[in-house]
Length: 325
Image 1 (cartoon, one colour):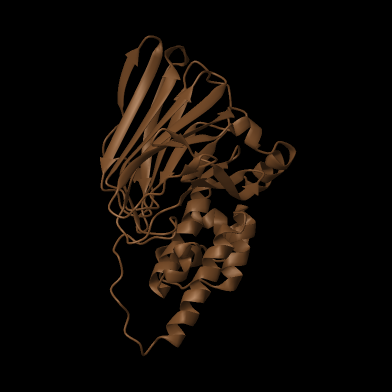
Image 2: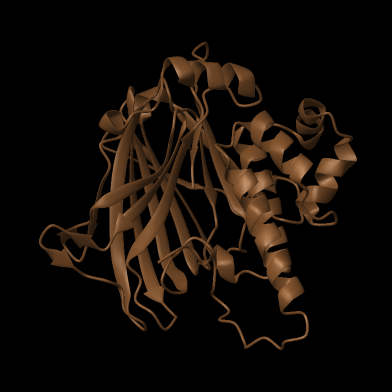
Protein backbone atom coordinates (compact mmCIF):
# COMPACT_ATOMS: atom_id res chain seq x y z
CA UNK A 1 0.00 0.00 0.00
CA UNK A 2 1.28 3.49 -0.81
CA UNK A 3 1.17 6.67 1.24
CA UNK A 4 -2.01 8.68 1.29
CA UNK A 5 -0.42 11.60 -0.58
CA UNK A 6 -2.52 10.52 -3.58
CA UNK A 7 -5.72 11.26 -1.65
CA UNK A 8 -4.93 14.86 -0.75
CA UNK A 9 -6.82 17.78 -2.23
CA UNK A 10 -4.95 20.75 -3.72
CA UNK A 11 -5.56 22.73 -0.55
CA UNK A 12 -4.22 19.94 1.68
CA UNK A 13 -1.19 19.42 -0.56
CA UNK A 14 -0.42 23.16 -0.56
CA UNK A 15 -0.69 23.25 3.23
CA UNK A 16 1.63 20.24 3.52
CA UNK A 17 4.15 21.95 1.20
CA UNK A 18 4.10 25.10 3.35
CA UNK A 19 4.48 23.06 6.54
CA UNK A 20 7.39 21.06 5.12
CA UNK A 21 9.22 24.22 4.05
CA UNK A 22 8.68 25.83 7.45
CA UNK A 23 9.74 22.62 9.19
CA UNK A 24 13.09 22.44 7.40
CA UNK A 25 13.72 26.15 7.86
CA UNK A 26 13.21 25.64 11.59
CA UNK A 27 15.45 22.55 11.56
CA UNK A 28 18.24 24.56 9.96
CA UNK A 29 17.70 27.49 12.35
CA UNK A 30 17.14 30.03 9.57
CA UNK A 31 14.90 33.08 9.63
CA UNK A 32 12.66 33.66 6.64
CA UNK A 33 14.95 36.50 5.60
CA UNK A 34 18.04 34.27 5.77
CA UNK A 35 16.37 31.53 3.74
CA UNK A 36 15.19 34.04 1.15
CA UNK A 37 18.74 35.38 0.82
CA UNK A 38 20.12 31.86 0.34
CA UNK A 39 17.49 31.18 -2.34
CA UNK A 40 17.80 34.52 -4.12
CA UNK A 41 14.23 35.57 -3.31
CA UNK A 42 12.64 38.55 -1.60
CA UNK A 43 11.93 37.80 2.10
CA UNK A 44 8.22 38.48 1.63
CA UNK A 45 8.04 35.67 -0.94
CA UNK A 46 9.17 33.05 1.59
CA UNK A 47 6.67 34.43 4.10
CA UNK A 48 3.84 34.26 1.57
CA UNK A 49 4.81 30.71 0.61
CA UNK A 50 4.86 29.47 4.21
CA UNK A 51 1.55 31.14 5.01
CA UNK A 52 -0.10 29.61 1.94
CA UNK A 53 -0.76 32.95 0.24
CA UNK A 54 1.36 31.75 -2.70
CA UNK A 55 0.90 28.32 -4.24
CA UNK A 56 3.87 25.92 -4.50
CA UNK A 57 6.11 26.32 -7.54
CA UNK A 58 8.75 24.07 -9.06
CA UNK A 59 11.46 26.73 -8.85
CA UNK A 60 10.78 27.45 -5.18
CA UNK A 61 10.72 23.75 -4.32
CA UNK A 62 14.07 23.09 -6.02
CA UNK A 63 15.80 26.08 -4.45
CA UNK A 64 14.37 25.49 -0.97
CA UNK A 65 15.30 21.81 -1.00
CA UNK A 66 18.86 22.64 -2.01
CA UNK A 67 19.30 25.59 0.37
CA UNK A 68 17.93 23.62 3.34
CA UNK A 69 19.50 20.26 2.55
CA UNK A 70 16.04 18.70 2.89
CA UNK A 71 16.83 15.35 1.20
CA UNK A 72 14.13 16.00 -1.46
CA UNK A 73 11.40 16.24 1.20
CA UNK A 74 10.23 19.68 -0.05
CA UNK A 75 10.51 18.57 -3.67
CA UNK A 76 8.29 15.57 -2.87
CA UNK A 77 5.66 17.89 -1.40
CA UNK A 78 5.66 19.90 -4.63
CA UNK A 79 5.19 16.68 -6.61
CA UNK A 80 2.23 15.84 -4.34
CA UNK A 81 0.75 19.27 -5.07
CA UNK A 82 1.15 18.83 -8.82
CA UNK A 83 -0.50 15.40 -8.61
CA UNK A 84 -3.40 16.86 -6.64
CA UNK A 85 -3.73 19.68 -9.17
CA UNK A 86 -3.87 17.18 -12.02
CA UNK A 87 -6.55 15.16 -10.24
CA UNK A 88 -8.51 18.32 -9.59
CA UNK A 89 -8.48 19.08 -13.30
CA UNK A 90 -9.79 15.63 -14.12
CA UNK A 91 -12.53 15.64 -11.48
CA UNK A 92 -13.58 19.30 -11.42
CA UNK A 93 -17.12 18.41 -12.49
CA UNK A 94 -17.46 15.35 -10.28
CA UNK A 95 -18.70 15.72 -6.70
CA UNK A 96 -16.40 14.28 -4.08
CA UNK A 97 -17.39 11.84 -1.37
CA UNK A 98 -17.01 13.04 2.24
CA UNK A 99 -13.47 12.62 3.54
CA UNK A 100 -12.37 11.28 6.91
CA UNK A 101 -11.41 14.19 9.16
CA UNK A 102 -8.30 12.44 10.45
CA UNK A 103 -6.84 11.60 7.03
CA UNK A 104 -3.18 12.56 6.71
CA UNK A 105 -0.12 11.65 4.62
CA UNK A 106 2.11 10.10 7.30
CA UNK A 107 0.21 6.86 7.84
CA UNK A 108 -0.64 4.18 5.33
CA UNK A 109 -3.63 1.92 5.12
CA UNK A 110 -5.95 4.10 7.19
CA UNK A 111 -6.45 7.32 9.13
CA UNK A 112 -4.53 7.53 12.41
CA UNK A 113 -5.07 9.63 15.51
CA UNK A 114 -2.47 9.90 18.27
CA UNK A 115 -4.32 9.65 21.57
CA UNK A 116 -1.17 10.17 23.66
CA UNK A 117 2.32 11.09 22.45
CA UNK A 118 5.01 10.85 25.14
CA UNK A 119 8.71 11.48 24.51
CA UNK A 120 11.55 11.27 27.00
CA UNK A 121 15.10 12.44 26.33
CA UNK A 122 17.88 11.35 28.69
CA UNK A 123 21.42 12.77 28.62
CA UNK A 124 24.30 11.26 30.57
CA UNK A 125 26.89 13.92 29.75
CA UNK A 126 27.95 12.25 26.50
CA UNK A 127 25.06 10.34 24.95
CA UNK A 128 21.46 11.29 24.28
CA UNK A 129 18.86 8.52 24.48
CA UNK A 130 15.34 9.15 23.22
CA UNK A 131 12.42 6.89 24.13
CA UNK A 132 9.08 7.50 22.39
CA UNK A 133 5.66 6.09 23.30
CA UNK A 134 2.59 6.71 21.14
CA UNK A 135 -0.96 5.50 21.66
CA UNK A 136 -2.35 5.19 18.13
CA UNK A 137 -6.03 4.84 17.21
CA UNK A 138 -7.19 3.65 13.80
CA UNK A 139 -10.22 5.77 12.86
CA UNK A 140 -10.45 4.53 9.29
CA UNK A 141 -11.73 1.47 7.51
CA UNK A 142 -8.52 -0.40 6.65
CA UNK A 143 -5.83 -2.06 8.81
CA UNK A 144 -2.67 -0.05 9.48
CA UNK A 145 0.45 -2.09 8.72
CA UNK A 146 3.25 0.46 9.19
CA UNK A 147 4.02 3.81 10.81
CA UNK A 148 6.46 6.49 9.65
CA UNK A 149 9.02 8.12 11.95
CA UNK A 150 11.66 10.75 11.19
CA UNK A 151 15.08 11.48 12.66
CA UNK A 152 17.15 14.46 11.54
CA UNK A 153 20.20 16.12 13.07
CA UNK A 154 21.77 19.54 12.65
CA UNK A 155 24.96 20.49 14.44
CA UNK A 156 25.15 24.06 13.11
CA UNK A 157 21.64 25.56 12.81
CA UNK A 158 21.67 28.68 10.70
CA UNK A 159 24.73 27.46 8.81
CA UNK A 160 23.40 24.79 6.41
CA UNK A 161 26.58 24.56 4.30
CA UNK A 162 28.75 24.04 7.36
CA UNK A 163 26.29 21.55 8.81
CA UNK A 164 26.03 19.57 5.57
CA UNK A 165 29.82 19.44 5.33
CA UNK A 166 30.03 18.18 8.91
CA UNK A 167 27.64 15.30 8.25
CA UNK A 168 29.34 14.39 5.00
CA UNK A 169 32.44 13.82 7.11
CA UNK A 170 30.53 12.38 10.09
CA UNK A 171 27.28 10.80 8.83
CA UNK A 172 24.60 9.61 11.18
CA UNK A 173 24.70 5.80 11.09
CA UNK A 174 22.18 3.08 11.81
CA UNK A 175 24.74 1.39 14.04
CA UNK A 176 25.01 4.33 16.41
CA UNK A 177 21.24 4.90 16.43
CA UNK A 178 20.59 1.30 17.54
CA UNK A 179 16.90 1.85 16.74
CA UNK A 180 14.47 -0.62 18.28
CA UNK A 181 10.66 -0.68 18.40
CA UNK A 182 7.92 -2.75 20.03
CA UNK A 183 4.12 -3.08 19.88
CA UNK A 184 1.96 -5.28 22.13
CA UNK A 185 5.16 -6.78 23.49
CA UNK A 186 6.25 -7.78 19.99
CA UNK A 187 9.39 -6.55 18.27
CA UNK A 188 8.54 -4.34 15.28
CA UNK A 189 10.69 -4.79 12.21
CA UNK A 190 11.58 -1.61 10.36
CA UNK A 191 12.51 -0.48 6.86
CA UNK A 192 14.50 2.60 5.88
CA UNK A 193 12.55 4.94 3.60
CA UNK A 194 15.22 7.67 3.35
CA UNK A 195 18.82 7.27 4.45
CA UNK A 196 20.87 10.49 4.26
CA UNK A 197 23.91 11.69 6.17
CA UNK A 198 21.83 13.78 8.60
CA UNK A 199 18.31 12.57 7.90
CA UNK A 200 16.49 9.27 8.31
CA UNK A 201 12.89 8.27 7.65
CA UNK A 202 11.84 4.83 8.80
CA UNK A 203 8.75 2.67 8.44
CA UNK A 204 8.00 0.81 11.66
CA UNK A 205 6.24 -2.38 10.58
CA UNK A 206 3.44 -4.07 12.51
CA UNK A 207 5.12 -7.42 11.91
CA UNK A 208 8.22 -9.48 12.63
CA UNK A 209 9.66 -12.86 11.72
CA UNK A 210 7.09 -14.64 13.91
CA UNK A 211 3.93 -12.98 12.64
CA UNK A 212 1.86 -9.87 11.86
CA UNK A 213 -0.15 -7.69 14.27
CA UNK A 214 -1.81 -4.89 12.25
CA UNK A 215 -3.80 -2.11 13.89
CA UNK A 216 -7.39 -2.77 12.86
CA UNK A 217 -10.18 -0.17 12.48
CA UNK A 218 -11.49 0.99 15.84
CA UNK A 219 -8.51 -0.33 17.77
CA UNK A 220 -5.91 1.56 19.82
CA UNK A 221 -2.41 0.35 20.62
CA UNK A 222 0.80 1.65 22.19
CA UNK A 223 3.96 1.56 20.12
CA UNK A 224 7.37 2.29 21.63
CA UNK A 225 10.68 3.02 19.97
CA UNK A 226 14.06 4.31 21.08
CA UNK A 227 17.46 5.28 19.70
CA UNK A 228 20.71 6.98 20.75
CA UNK A 229 22.94 9.72 19.35
CA UNK A 230 26.19 11.08 20.77
CA UNK A 231 26.34 14.76 21.67
CA UNK A 232 28.81 15.41 18.85
CA UNK A 233 25.80 15.06 16.51
CA UNK A 234 22.90 15.96 18.80
CA UNK A 235 22.51 19.27 20.60
CA UNK A 236 20.71 21.57 22.96
CA UNK A 237 17.28 21.60 21.36
CA UNK A 238 14.48 19.15 20.71
CA UNK A 239 11.61 20.05 18.40
CA UNK A 240 8.34 18.19 18.01
CA UNK A 241 6.27 18.62 14.84
CA UNK A 242 2.59 17.66 15.05
CA UNK A 243 2.06 15.66 11.85
CA UNK A 244 -0.99 13.63 12.90
CA UNK A 245 -4.15 14.66 14.78
CA UNK A 246 -2.97 14.48 18.40
CA UNK A 247 -4.96 14.57 21.63
CA UNK A 248 -2.15 14.83 24.19
CA UNK A 249 1.53 15.67 23.74
CA UNK A 250 4.06 15.20 26.54
CA UNK A 251 7.82 15.79 26.62
CA UNK A 252 10.31 14.98 29.39
CA UNK A 253 13.97 16.00 29.44
CA UNK A 254 16.35 14.44 31.97
CA UNK A 255 19.83 15.88 32.60
CA UNK A 256 22.53 15.37 35.24
CA UNK A 257 21.86 17.90 37.99
CA UNK A 258 25.61 18.59 38.15
CA UNK A 259 25.35 20.28 34.73
CA UNK A 260 23.00 22.89 36.22
CA UNK A 261 20.52 22.71 33.30
CA UNK A 262 18.05 25.43 32.31
CA UNK A 263 15.18 24.76 29.86
CA UNK A 264 12.84 27.03 27.88
CA UNK A 265 10.65 26.58 24.80
CA UNK A 266 8.81 28.13 21.85
CA UNK A 267 5.74 27.31 19.78
CA UNK A 268 5.35 27.91 16.04
CA UNK A 269 2.20 27.38 13.98
CA UNK A 270 1.23 27.64 10.32
CA UNK A 271 0.02 31.19 10.91
CA UNK A 272 2.35 32.56 13.60
CA UNK A 273 6.05 33.02 14.22
CA UNK A 274 7.78 31.42 17.19
CA UNK A 275 6.44 32.56 20.55
CA UNK A 276 7.09 31.38 24.12
CA UNK A 277 5.32 28.22 25.26
CA UNK A 278 2.06 29.08 26.94
CA UNK A 279 3.11 27.14 30.02
CA UNK A 280 6.62 26.73 31.35
CA UNK A 281 8.21 23.27 31.66
CA UNK A 282 7.91 21.96 35.22
CA UNK A 283 11.13 21.04 37.02
CA UNK A 284 12.03 18.59 39.75
CA UNK A 285 15.29 17.11 41.05
CA UNK A 286 15.68 13.49 42.11
CA UNK A 287 18.76 11.35 42.80
CA UNK A 288 21.21 13.52 40.88
CA UNK A 289 18.91 13.99 37.85
CA UNK A 290 16.97 17.12 36.95
CA UNK A 291 13.74 16.33 35.11
CA UNK A 292 11.79 18.87 33.05
CA UNK A 293 8.23 18.02 31.97
CA UNK A 294 5.91 19.81 29.56
CA UNK A 295 2.43 18.85 28.32
CA UNK A 296 -0.21 20.24 25.98
CA UNK A 297 -3.59 18.93 24.82
CA UNK A 298 -5.07 18.96 21.32
CA UNK A 299 -2.15 20.77 19.63
CA UNK A 300 -2.85 22.20 16.19
CA UNK A 301 -1.86 20.14 13.17
CA UNK A 302 1.55 21.26 11.81
CA UNK A 303 2.36 23.12 15.04
CA UNK A 304 5.97 22.81 16.22
CA UNK A 305 7.13 22.88 19.83
CA UNK A 306 10.81 23.50 20.42
CA UNK A 307 12.49 22.95 23.79
CA UNK A 308 15.99 24.35 24.25
CA UNK A 309 18.46 24.12 27.08
CA UNK A 310 21.84 25.18 28.33
CA UNK A 311 24.19 23.77 30.94
CA UNK A 312 25.43 26.55 33.17
CA UNK A 313 28.31 24.41 34.39
CA UNK A 314 29.55 24.27 30.76
CA UNK A 315 29.45 27.95 29.82
CA UNK A 316 32.21 27.68 27.21
CA UNK A 317 31.17 24.39 25.60
CA UNK A 318 29.43 24.71 22.24
CA UNK A 319 27.37 21.57 21.80
CA UNK A 320 25.56 20.23 18.80
CA UNK A 321 21.98 20.79 17.75
CA UNK A 322 19.43 18.32 16.41
CA UNK A 323 15.79 17.67 15.87
CA UNK A 324 13.40 14.79 15.77
CA UNK A 325 9.79 14.85 14.53
